[in-house]
Length: 455
Ligand code: ADP
Image (cartoon, rainbow, N blue to C red; front, side, top):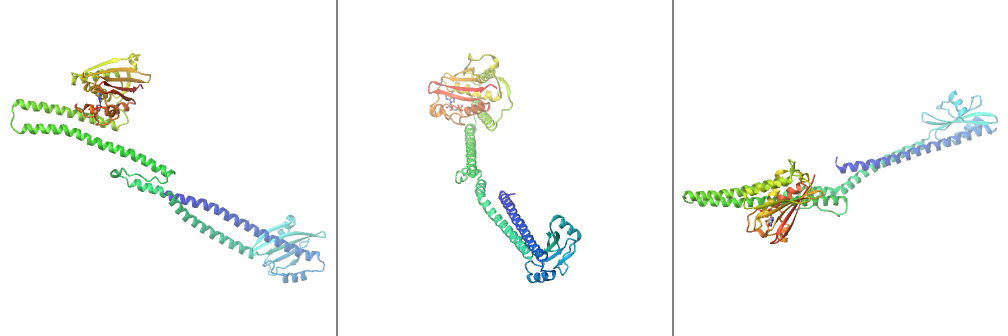
């Protein structure tokens, strides 16, 4: 059910309950008032008749009836019947015999002194009246035509007012809830119109203060994040294809030149060797891109094993030296390491090796002596690994960008590279709950500090 309908029904429900309670209270109070008022009038009539008949010696039943006939109309269809102490009827104005007074009724009136009851449309009052040690029973009855008519009219008025009020409340509730919910519907329409093609669109924030404005602001913040992620993704795809296209164009060019005319065996071997070099280069790029894509999307490291960080660093060093033997990597242990166990770390061996490889490779690649020093130390809650070199250093302008994918510093334009390594390192370290910081001075060297939390 729509919130608009729900609100309207709830509103109508509440108002209907209050109105019904008020209507019933009015009706019941009026009905009681009419009945009480009518019995008072019956009582007055009964006492007046008894007084005339019993107290006044000069008035007998026949005379009283005559008086009564002339006064008729005080109460509609009024009947008065009086019995003496022995139960004998001494006065009766009910000529049509519409009222039946049984012996039991007389007894009960004598006992209770006053009895109210109904017979057909008549409301009857039975009274016990004492005079001169005689006990008389007076029964007065009449039909409250005017009172009942008023009660009926009142009930119709109340019902009509109730129905009209409910209809009015329903329509006003429907309009009011529609108006109250309109800003939400507006937000829904606006959000609905946003797609990949117009991610820069934003939802209107209304007055900027109420809950709906808060909702719109939250949507807008989410849209900002999605847009940023989309742009980063687009840039990544653009950069990645650019990085792959370059070596592929070189390979294609080499092949076209080689095929232009027949060549001797030596030339073919040279071309093939050069192609092999380019393909190795291409493989490195695609592997790094793949790794970057893998670590960018995941929030979990899988599989996770217990690793000895120093051993992993030694293994990585061996691999790097195998591919580039002219590099020089020294690994040293700081005194802060108390025992071997403090170098145990829960992590993904393959990913951490990629990170260490990149940091060692960069240190060697960007220093004239192709050397990198790796210090392993421990803090209270971290394993600390520092990769230092005495190389070209990084200008302050570049420092804030070097962890962005495909960013290459101005200091290394003349050297080969793709700008993928450090962004990969950063993601891998963060995926392991760690942090990476860099301290660098141009022409003096750089220090990359990786901290991995001991788990
Ligand atoms: P690449 O080395 O392929 O350019 P990276 O992502 O590994 O890509 O590094 C990004 C940039 O950071 C490099 O282009 C370079 O400007 C700078 N950089 C990284 N490591 C060093 C270092 N040890 N010394 C000087 N500059 C570095």
